[in-house]
Amino acid sequence: VNQKGLDYYSRLVDALLDAGIRPFCTIYHWELPQALEDKGGWPNRDLASYYADFAAILAKNLGDRITVWAPFNMPGTFTYRGYGTGWNPPYRTGYDLFLKAAHTVNLAQGMAFRVIKAASSKATVGNAYGMEPVYPKTNSQADRAAAERFHAFHNLYFLETAMKGEYPKAF
Image (tube, rainbow, N blue to C red; front, side, top):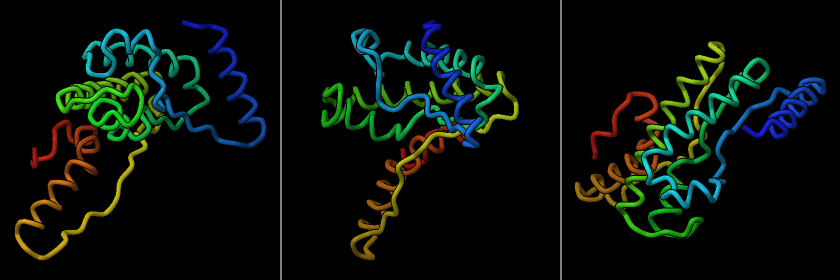
């Protein structure tokens, strides 16, 4: 634990509250430490537990003053672009890497929810998702089915695991 880092954020939270600003904490905004990427990054299932430990430390140290937590910012985007298409860091490509990363992040979001709520039962916890409406190109059955699959993949893949503990039925 980096106590100097925790002290910095504790002072920051206090300054925000003193200024009448309610802090919202996004724990992960696409900045995986290189040492963890070197261990395989998000496709490595062990990262779910590492992440939960990190979230617990933050909640224990700041949860008395922060009541709104987003464990992840746009988990579908950083897993797909970072491990599927290679458009974003760590610039790895492979559908299997993306699926492993996405599953690990889904496990991590559930674990983070539990440790944050254990530290602060009044906390509100939920990811920041990037969602968008999906419409079929035509009214054909094939286009409607394609739109539904895209909706499930793009809008529900992480949301339904967080809310229902299962992947969308489309998968």
